[in-house]
Length: 113
Image (cartoon, rainbow, N blue to C red):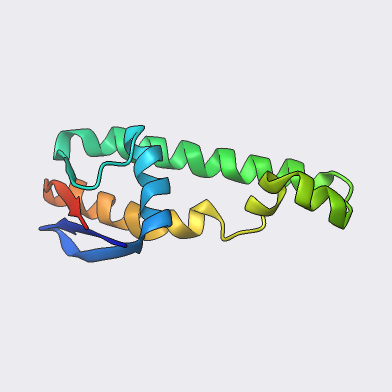
């Protein structure tokens, strides 16, 4: 499933289901299939995304300082492989740009599938 985010300030932003849900959880605490973020709420949403990106980077830094796990440990600890995926900062960058443009243009962001 694809999510399509829209704002009058930018072009549409299309994201894969898992990435969109991850960002919506950061932004709103849940991941509704359809919704809206009002312009006045966008600065707070942007702050939540920035905090989540910093937390993700801190986790990656802490993980990189630990000894490398054995292959057996990887299967026993599935969250270790989660950190090897694409960084949250990379996935959030297009959304951050949309939010910043929407703040500047005083425009809401809506989405649906």
